[in-house]
Image 1 (cartoon, rainbow, N blue to C red):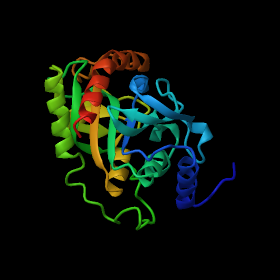
Image 2 (image 1 turned 90 degrees about the vertical axis):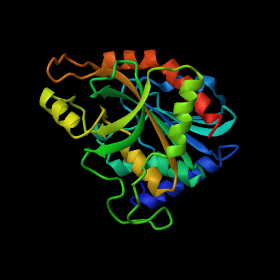
Image 3 (image 1 turned 30 degrees about the horizontal axis):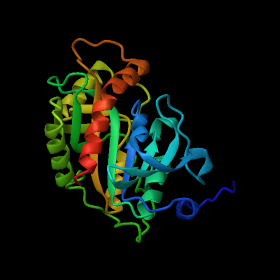
Image 4 (image 1 turned 60 degrees about the vertical axis):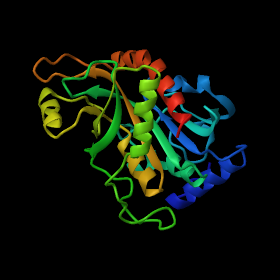
Amino acid sequence: MREMPDYKAKVEDAVSFLKGRIKRPPAVVIILGTGLGSLIDSMEVDVQLPYQDIPHFPQSTVPGHHGNLVFGTLSGRDVAVLQGRFHYYEGYSTRELTLPLRVLSLLGADILVLTNAAGGLNPDYTPGTIMVIRDHLNFIGENPLRGANIEEWGPRFPDLSEPYDRALMGAAMGSAEKIHLTNVTSGVYVAIPGPSLETPAETRFLRSAGADAVGMSSVPEVIVAKHAGMRVLALSAIANVNDPDNFVPIMLDDIIRAAGEIEPLLQELVRETLLII
């Protein structure tokens, strides 16, 4: 595959490639996080493409991320599902790891639904909580919009006074009530670079900064989505709760297992929410 030094050219190349392979442009992009990749089992799949087959897409290297872009319908909506995401700690810049979302926004998608597995910081949370993200802190240390702005993609200084769409959050909370999910709340998500997990002191600091849950993803995608004019809904599966005064080791296998236990409920919530947005 020929390397293209210009980011805009890479994006346009991927857009052109996908236009020739999909039946309909997606209205909704869904990004599936660690251990949350089986939502596609509920889809009517039209096209499934491994990331390595798509020009300039990054490759997912983390356990629990399948590495496919899937087009089809879910709950009657035309969707594109990123079955596995990319992370800053894998060595990608935030601009590189958000390239797939930029491509899908240019294909016509105007809603982003993203999921992630996160560690709980709020002491009132328990493992198994689903948190509807209402705001975030970007502690990754890099912004995907850094560098030259491409005006046709979005403004130089996008407004983030409402990064998560209130109507979509309301739809998710209403859907949770309708299907009798009781362990659903809203909160603030903080993104850290990773891959090392938080120390007790860092956990205490992140709590004091106002975060209810911590993870290593999602915020770069939200920034790009808002730049592209998309509406955003984000859901965190709380896999564990970090107590800085009674800290225990956190293992990735345990996070994947816990996320897998939450996954059926999260899938049901996503499907139900898509019916009304």
